[in-house]
Length: 269
Image 1 (tube, rainbow, N blue to C red):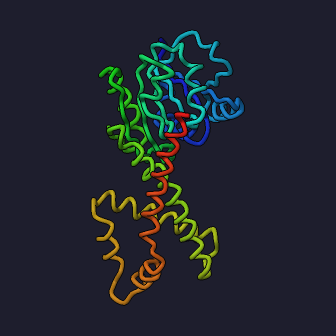
Image 2 (cartoon, helix red, strand yellow; image 1 turned 180 degrees about the horizontal axis):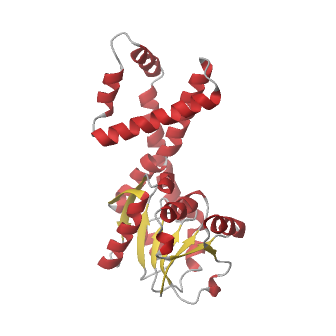
Image 3 (cartoon, rainbow, N blue to C red; image 1 turned 90 degrees about the vertical axis):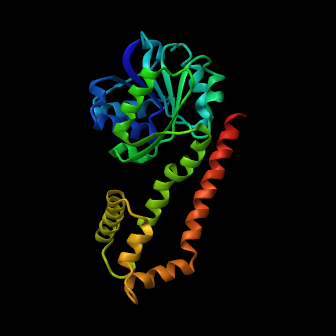
């Protein structure tokens, strides 16, 4: 077994993981190998980061130490069947809703890890819940947790909770991006040029998140600091609440959770 990591799937999440790990120079410790059924994706990502891409698994002379599976749930079975010969590898799955027991049907007796990261791992600010199967050895656990630490906030979780975290942190970036776009649109509506409005909206969200994280305060406390009596902020908050803003966000997370569970069921068919 060689000290390498095979990344199977170079779409949005696969690319984010590769870029996040390269950002912390892990590609200098491990040999990174990129594989995708759309060969151009692997080639382009590899070229942009000066990495290697794999056209045929038969070209690999030994098992990679880790295999990252970043394919869509519906493609998991096909991908795993092609990887069964890597008997010594630890498999790290990013497939939403596909449980360890389902993965074991295709690669029995293999060490399996599930992670549910979000796209922010690309810049080292992701959320990475991790669940290990019982056959993953202590040394591999420690090495993987150290590896994942470059991607953001890492924590071990019960597998039953991964769908919950997927709905919140996995879908969350999409919700927040939508909010930033709406905030910027609001700036345009009152007369701020689009480019300037978007920069202001993005920096404002970044600043709020950093302040909450650094100070460890409840969001309501920050809201109360900003919303002075009879001021502009409380007037805007009232309008948002008239549209059930918080309730809609909560329902969005709930719908994402329901869909995550459905994807898992579909993956079994």
